[in-house]
Structures are given as C-alpha cells and as structure tokens.
View (cartoon, rainbow, N blue to C red):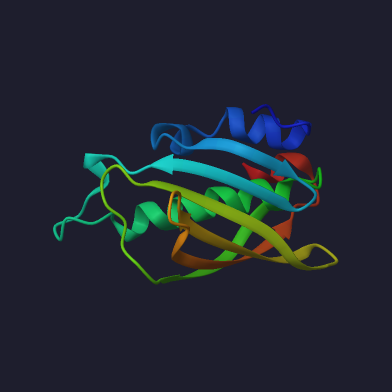
Length: 139
C-alpha cells in the first residue's frame, strides 16, 4: 500500500528498521494504521517463541504511522506494552493502531497486535506521541 499522506509516505519509505523486519503497511489514515509481519526463524528467542522486542517493534511501527497520518511530523515520547500470548515462527502478526486522545501537540494511541487466522491478541501497546514544531526536528 502507498499511503496518501506525504509525511507517512516519506517516513515509511525511509524506515529501514521496519522493512528489514518484513513489515507491510496495510492501512494508514485518520489517526489509524494496520501493519502486518510474518514471524521468521531469526525472530525466535531461546524459548522458541517470538522475541518480545520484535513484537514491540511491530506495534511501535503501527503507532508511528497512525500518529503521523494527520500530516504532522510526530515522534514517540514513550510506550508501554503488555504481552498476553506468544507467537511462533510462521505466524502472521497484525498491529492495529488507533488514536485514543489528542490534545495540543500530545497524543495517546492504542495498538493491539493480533495473530492473523485466529485473531488471538498477542500484545496490547499504548504509545504517547509528541508533534514536532518543525518538520526537520525529527532527525
């Protein structure tokens, strides 16, 4: 999918981290986003399940797209994540992000990571965002 937003388009095209993890942008706009990723063998930890940092990265990428979908350069100011179920190699995970609250330059976004196929919730993520006052401040 190509986002219909120059800020999201620029950010997604330059996001080497998300691309290297095989993430695919499925939806972006109006404070929401959906990103999918297949769990690969190199994402598995010592307990034979998907590494929590990889799941958090997927949720963080969906959060980033959602909070930038309003057309203003926005960065994370923090997040919390709760892991509810494990994921295995071959699972397709989908992170669904939505804006919960926006006031001034600050926002709160929720992201639910599900396993495609059975829709089991793998993780719940809450991100806090901050709009930048100038576009080049994100660097």
